[in-house]
View 1: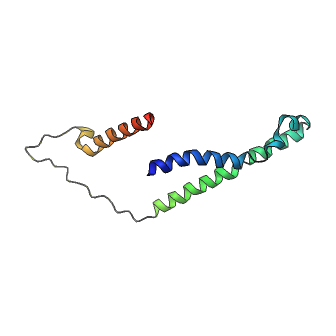
View 2: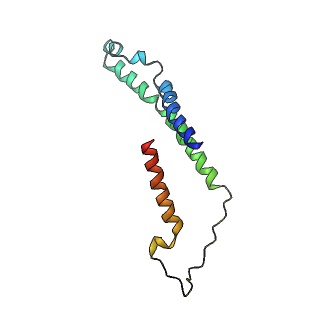
View 3: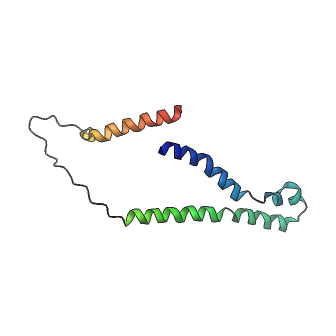
Length: 118
């Protein structure tokens, strides 16, 4: 389900963002810019560049809000397991002591492969 939402957002968001940024672009056509002097062209370019500030400021504010929500959420500390290995067990080296990490890396590798194929 989340993959469908992700792909849908990948289609919708660029269209909405482009519609917001590029609305009224007829004022910035080559013929309109050619009719202006250098100061007028510079003013129009500055106006066009200022259009990008608000969408990125909104995205930055959303990320800061998301960061604050995560920071102030009540997450409990994970309990650490004992590091002592039983006498009969073979000790593994480095990251291989944690099979969840290895299996997670393999799962991510497989997932990226499936996404590339799709």
